[in-house]
Length: 292
Image (tube, rainbow, N blue to C red):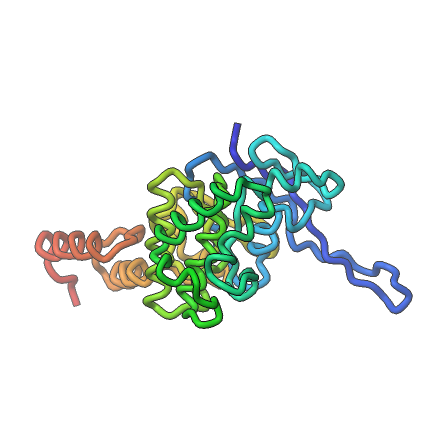
């Protein structure tokens, strides 16, 4: 059975009149179905308002279905079942776009311990876990400092350490690099890659196309629906559909597409620079320059 199973999920935002009567139903999610296996690296793409962050919050039980169902590790999401909600949140941790929105401790160590303490873990285990997780994030030397004195990238690493200290089986990264500079983004992407290599299930929500070229599968959302799904090559090979959804393919893929339009026999599913250079040189020497 899938670790995460979303079936025919519906989430509505109601619009009310002055008398508090519902006059319109807006569907943030409209009949969404996704299966995610344990250990997979899944990317969810979409422009602002496509529904991707709403979907993310269903995976962590911050939101509950208006229709359809969400199952996490064989536990069904249910707003009336507090114990199920707790179990799901143990299984699925979430890292948000703005780390300030999820940092609550006065020191880095205290913040990292917040989640495990709320799960009533043994204090001795918490202490060892906190140090280990901060060390894994390269943040152990800051453990007695105030989070307010850290950079954005450092705060995100503290947020990730706090999630890891609860021993989840899956982490959802909801635009976790959007507010970071290039160096901070690269650091967080390195951490995501390491976690996936260690067997963690990853759900990565972003609008940076280059961040998801190593994902196992990609889902593209538009207007609350799944527009495209498949491997990175399958998805980015359909650049016309991607662009109609208000997104852009990775830069190197776009260059390959433009070269093909100019007469070069280039594949349009290239995702990285090394592959591009290899193919380009091969085609150039084999076929020569295109005719004027």
